[in-house]
Length: 429
Image: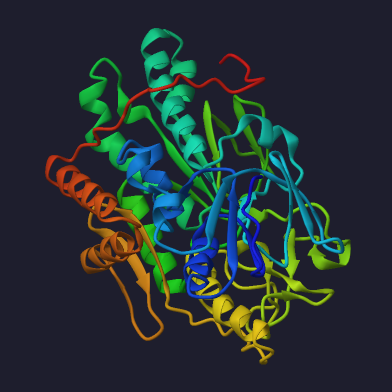
């Protein structure tokens, strides 16, 4: 990997997401060599991926070069690499660009889409966890409307204009709201030859309410907002399969669609090489103690989505969201400093700062520790918080200008098919 030799301890971080970047910043003043590895050369602001998918933003406005984020920090090295395996005993990691020895290893590899072993859904549905996946979804949505113009078969046309979103967490809710706004304000102008009123947006949730991680008040208000926008909300309905044409469920309800988005589950992106007892088989997250440390390997840590700290309040680990990842990254740096100095580490305590989701124009729900609100004010709070956590002044300005323009003009300029997308093994509709 051509990493410079050093007499200082080497801390290797796998993953340049919220957790990895936060940790790298806290290690900047320590006498250690920090090596960050990621399969992308940019940090991706995942909460706004749905806006890339629906043409609200271009991908470069929610991504920022990792090298630029950490360019002013000493003893920092970045390598574009896909880590394949860990040797925890020999203290080696194996990547597609070579091998590297570590003194301390921090796994911050994040999460990936969980299809729960359903191969038909994995093959034919669309995921939205990365920028390339979001661009693929954007292309597919636009291509389907172009195809709808060319067919005289009414059933085929309706299927091309129908959308099924499985999973009513923040991602599913926000995507459904964005698609509903496109249907109302943009499609009639772009496709005057199509009766876009026939387009249907279905949001399917296996449980009895949407946004189940938020309060019941937030769930009820979000569902009301979605229904106002014309979204069909289905609860207590479980999707069993999708063959590229038909979505089947655990009841006699089926959906004909050319676009199904799977937002129903995530799992930890654990790295090969750790013993099975260190991995939770349900979530594929790495089991760590209160210091984000593997019990069997005191020099290996896991933070962010891939880490699972079991507590009385969170028996299955903290939420796989940005805030726990950022907080764990910020705390682990000082803990590594204490470890190097022979001092006891401080256990991690998650500070729940609340949750929020936007449903569309002037519609959002916010749960704070002491306050819960919804509507226009919640929508402005949601925008401010997301702008604040974007990295880079340029990105904040671009996103802000785009939002203002889209609000005034009720438009989404980035509805471009930059690279055509066709799913593998997709049947012709």
